[in-house]
Image 1: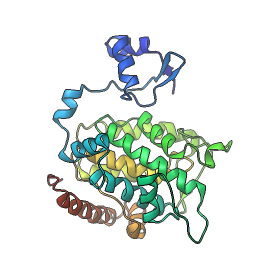
Image 2: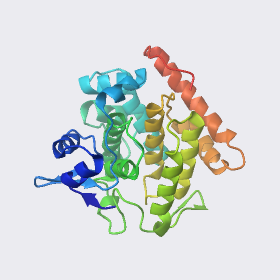
Image 3: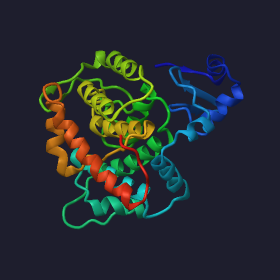
Image 4: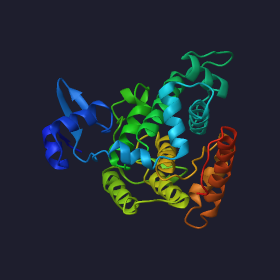
Length: 299
C-alpha cells in the first residue's frame, strides 16, 4: 500500500487540499499520519462522508456511545462495553486478567495484583483494546477497508513483546504461514489479494444483515491475515459493522468460547452452530440495551 500527499488526495477526491487536511487532523482518514508538516495518506483511503449525512442514519446505540465517550460518562453503556468486550475478547485469546482487573485498568489506569504474576502483554493489550473500541466507535459509519483492518491491528499490537520481533508486522499482514485450530490459513504472499477480494464482495452491497456480518467474520478468520490478533480484530470488525448497519451488536463471552470455535469450524456444513451462538450473544446484549433504555430494531 502506497501513500499520497494531501494535494494528490484532494485531486483524487475532487475537494480542496484544506478539506483533506481537516479530515486528516480530525482523525477521519484512517492510517493518515504527519511527517513534519506533510500528511501521508493511504492511497486507498476513502473520502469521509459528510457529518450531517452520517448523523442522520446513526442508530440510538451508536449515538449513545458517541455521547458517553465524548462526555466521559461513567457507568453507562460505553463503560460497560469497554470492560466486557475487552475482557471477553482478550480472555478468549488467553489473557489471564480478571474482569475486575480489566475494569480497574479502564477506570483508574492501575491494576491490583494478588497471587500469580501478570503478563505485561495482557495489560498492554487491554489498554490497546480500549483504544481500538474507541476507534470503532469513531469510524463506525466509515466503509470497511484494508486501512481500517490494518489500523485496528496496529492499535491492538503496538507496544507488545510481539511488536519488537523481526518476524512480526504491526499493522500489516503476516510474514510467516500460520494455522488456526489445526486448519491451514491463507499463505502470506496471498493475503493481500484474498482480503481485497473479500472486501470487494462484501462491499458490493450497501447494507448488510446479521448473517452477512457473521459470514464475513468466518471468511476473515480463515484468511487469518495477521501473525497474531486475528480473532480480536475480527470481532472488533463485527462490532463495527453491526453499528454501521443498525444491527444489534453482540459480545462473544468467554463462556461461549467452545461453541464459537465449533461454529467457525463447522460453518460450511452447518452455519446454524455459529449463528445460534451469535444470536444468543445478541440476546444478552439486547438485555443490556433494555436496561439502559436504548431502543433497537429487530435486526
